[in-house]
Amino acid sequence: MRKGNGCNSVVLAFGGPCMGRDPVLPKGWNEPSHDQLRFKSDFPRVLGQHQRCPMNDPENVRGTGSGLVAVVTGASRGLGAGLAKAFADTGLRLGLCARTVPAAPDGADAVTASVDVTDARALDRFADEVVERFGRVDLWVNNAGVLGPIGPLVDADPGALRRHIDINVTGVLLGCRAFARVVRAQSGGGVLVNISSGAATKIYEGWAAYCASKAAVDMMTAVVATEERTHGLRAYALAPGVVDTDMQAQIRATPAASFPSVARFIKLDEEQAFNSPGRVASFILDLVEGRREVSDGVRIRVPDQPHHG
Ligand SMILES: NC(=O)c1ccc[n+]([C@@H]2O[C@H](COP(=O)([O-])OP(=O)(O)OC[C@H]3O[C@@H](n4cnc5c(N)ncnc54)[C@H](OP(=O)(O)O)[C@@H]3O)[C@@H](O)[C@H]2O)c1
Image 1 (tube, rainbow, N blue to C red):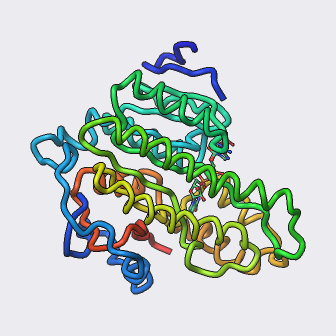
Image 2 (cartoon, rainbow, N blue to C red):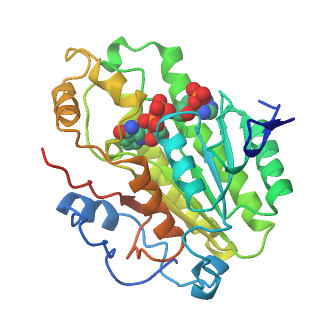
C-alpha cells in the first residue's frame, strides 16, 4: 500500500425508491423516447415501497454528493474515469479500481486498486479496504466492461466469448455480491448502479456476446433489487447513452462486415452527439439522492444530451 500522487489517496497492492411518477427531467433535457419509457416499464415492479434511508432524507443531503462514499469499477479510463472525476468534483469520497490502477482525480479522497472484477476475493478485499478507510459505501457503480469479440457469432473464438461473459456477467454479479454484503453490514442502505446498454434490448449484428451480457446485467439487477430491498439496497441498470471512450473508438474502427451498424456510430462521432460522463454522473447522483423518481422497474436510460448536429 502506498500514498498516492499528491491527492489524498491510497493505492492498494492487491489485484428513493420512489413511487408512482415518471422521472422528472431537468430543464433542457430531452423527454425520454417511447423506447426509453418501454425500457422501464416491461420489468418487474421492484421499487414499489418507499424505504427510509439516510440518502433519501432531505435533512441528510449535504449538497450534491457531499461526503458520500462511491465505488466505481473500471475507473482507469473512459466512462469510469469520467464518473470518478465528476463524483470527486461534487465532494464524494471514492473507491476506484480496474486492472490498471486508476489515477485518483485531483484533490480526491480516494482508495485506488488493481482489481480484476472476475476475481471474487480481490473484489471483496477491495470492498473491505474502502469500508476500512471511509466507514461505509453509499453508492457502488459496476462499470467495468468489454465489448468484444465483435463479428458474427459463427466466427467467434470460444475462449474470447467465455472471457467476455466472465467480465461482463460474472464480474458484475461479483460486484453486486460484494456491495450487497457491505450494505447488509451497515445502516442506512446503499445504491447499486450497474452500467448496462441499449444493446440489452436492441439487436446489433456482430454484438452477440455484448447484447447477451448487457441483457444479463439488466436481469441480475432486477433480482438483486428484489432480494436486497429489505436491507435498504436500491438497484438500477443504467444505460448511459453513447459516451465517447476507447470503446466507441473500437466500434468506429470495426469493418461493416463485422458490425453492420458501424455507420451510425461514425455519424454520432461526426455530430459529436455524445453523453458526457459528467451528465451520466449527475444522473446517478440524482438517483442516489432521491431527486429523480423512477416509477417502476430497475432499468433506466440517461436521456441523450441535446446537441447541434
Ligand atoms: N462508451 C459507451 O458509449 C457505452 C455505452 C453503453 C454502455 N457502456 C458501458 O460503460 C462501461 C464503460 O465503458 P467505456 O466505454 O468507458 O469502456 P472503456 O473505455 O473500454 O473502459 C473500460 C473500463 O473497464 C475496465 N475493465 C475492463 N475489464 C476489466 C476487468 N476484467 N476488471 C476490471 N476492470 C476492467 C478497464 O480498465 P482495465 O483495462 O485497466 O482493467 C476500463 O477502465 C462498460 O460497461 C460499457 O459496456 C459504454
